[in-house]
Amino acid sequence: MTTNNHQADDAKQKQAMSPEERQRQMEQQQKLIAQRSAAIKHKFVIISGKGGVGKTTVAVGLAAVLAAEGHSVGLLDTDITGPNVPLMIGLEGQRPRASESGDAILPVSTSSGIKVMSMGMLTQHKDTPVIWRGPLRGIAVRQLIADVEWGELDYLIVDLPPGTGDEPLTIAQSLPDVDGMIVVSTPQQASLDDCRKAINFTRQLDLEVLGVVENMSGFICPDCGKETPIFGKGGAEDMAKEMGVAFLGRLPLVPEVVQLTDQGVALTDPRMPAPIRQALENIAAQLPGQ
Image (cartoon, rainbow, N blue to C red; front, side):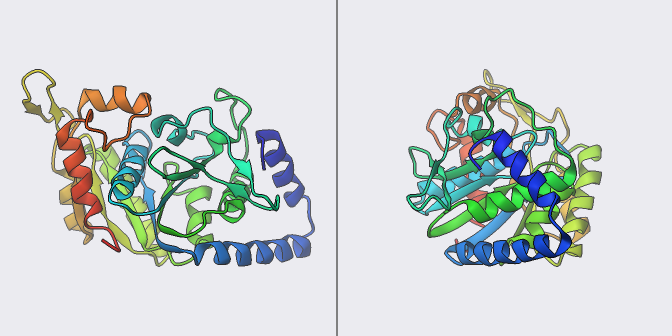
């Protein structure tokens, strides 16, 4: 699984197998997933009902906070068609290596030690689209879980694509002992409605909802410091109470964050605005194992 074409061919080959062959291979793959997963103490998944709410920002930010606290952290980007983790974590253009035995992939590490794997590291070019139907994406996600040699980790953070489709379902059914899911929303009603679906999706799969994060909760002017609720404020907290789940906190909308994350600057970096860093630290403090 070293290139986009290789992975596509591999996935298509699996689809062409007989049902019996596919079942045997999935059972073997699940055993491998269980072995690798046993070395990871805590696993949580970042989900949202819709795109554009800053889910990857939360995933990358929490990984940075936990690593800064001295934890060993892995970050798995399962957005097959729109992987943004490599850009936001400063690893764009980096590619993973094969293990010495050749039967596993070694994740790419950041300067702070976060181990990262993303489909964006496997495509031939960052502008190369992945044009696969749902079943192929599900197979690819299973490969990303099974083939990556994470080693021993305190935390594995899984960044999902938007919605409740093939990738979230594959993660929920394949990755054992998940601590739970963190739901990310903006204060707008359209986002809140979709996040209710994400919460119900999680519950139907008998997984715990660890809580809700409200992103873009008030615009902070870089000149005067005044906060303006451009997209509203407090909607996600109200929704969390209504749905009977914890509210973990809110992240303000700060222009510098967009510029710095596009440059791969960690959200814990001193150049990041203090309100963002403090909010992420408060959210991370509520996670399992803290």
